[in-house]
Length: 329
Image 1 (cartoon, rainbow, N blue to C red):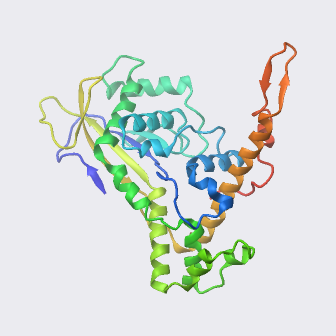
Image 2: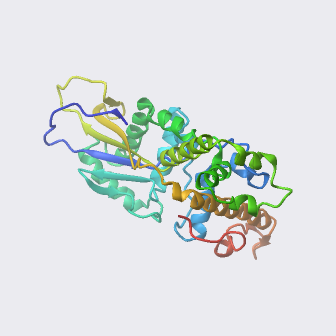
Image 3: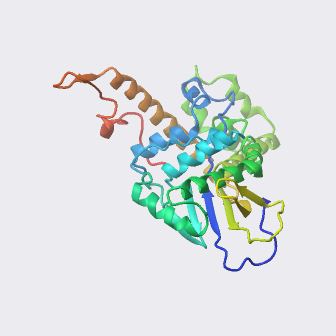
């Protein structure tokens, strides 16, 4: 889906800078099939909970403050906040390319927070793109990215697709077992007092309804895992404004831009069980983290000088020792 695109013609000599963002899930699930034990899913964004599992598995070294709800908020302020958080801790969710070569962000998921040295190097790279004083280019560039997302409306369209997931994996997994004509392993795991009619009723629906539930879930899963690409080229002097022009007020520059999505191959049916297991690990790990933090909040020590020190992070190495196992996929 292309929302904004370059006009035809070759802009000789003008640099092309492209941003790749992995927006992730932009809403809190509302499915009635979410169990009471997993009710935290209705209040905490999936991205935040998944960070706990990744930190436990040493796939990342620190939390990202990025909140997808900010990016999908539809407000300039929320989008700007999200972009700044992604820049501060890019992990594998924020990358920048100049003329096709990566100049910011890592190839893997464990990229540390943006250091002063990395920030200075990126600031220097932007000198041929952003016409601002040294120390102001990165700020202006992040404003340009946020403004382009805001005016494009691309994330509004993406969110509509993500919200096809109305059953959550906790409901869709039952429909999956209907499709493959095998006994439901989830129902087998649930004890009788937890196996309510909400779940058993899913095994009485027509096959075409099961197919729709699972198909919608997989389409939504694809939309939750795709990448948003935004490409910019400074406009040449004298070129008339067009519908794909974004104006950056802080530098008095105009940019031609292109906004589109990649990684839109439909997720395969065979991944349904893996999605269910990953969901359990994510919720379990996050819940254990909250429990441990609550306990360590009570454990404070008095230093030799009489000051109180919070011990929340003193136990970081052993933070998730219970109820949080396995690598995420």
